[in-house]
Image 1 (cartoon, rainbow, N blue to C red):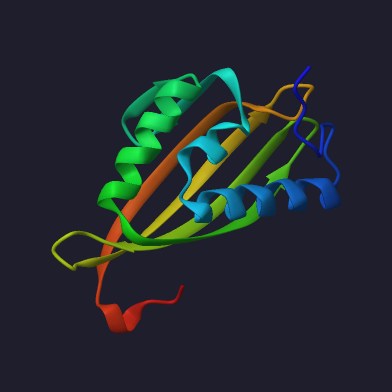
Image 2 (cartoon, rainbow, N blue to C red):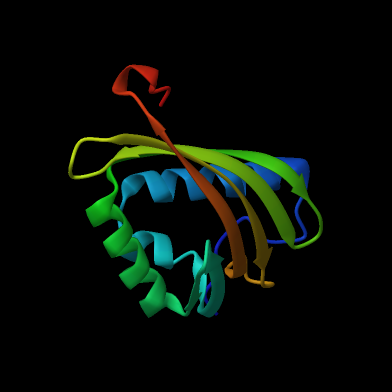
Length: 136
């Protein structure tokens, strides 16, 4: 059985580790790598987009990082329980026209017993910024 450590139930230490692993994976901008942290039938809501399964995750992330250039993300643990973690995050990117953005959001994650994320619900807001306002 495929496992992704650390496994639930989470402690402060293991929840922080899970958040850092997610941040590192997303900053790799490698959709295949990111998708391996999710169950085969993982359910997502990302803004108004609903995604089901690893293949749709890969397709979604491929498109995302084709549009969101120079992407850089920072995640922060907000709360956790047995098999759930909530994070706040921000990331910055520019579009093909050179306009920079900072996106702010919250994610709720639910893990299966093998440490794979089975549900991810994200709310995100984008803010246009000047390049000189970048923090990441």
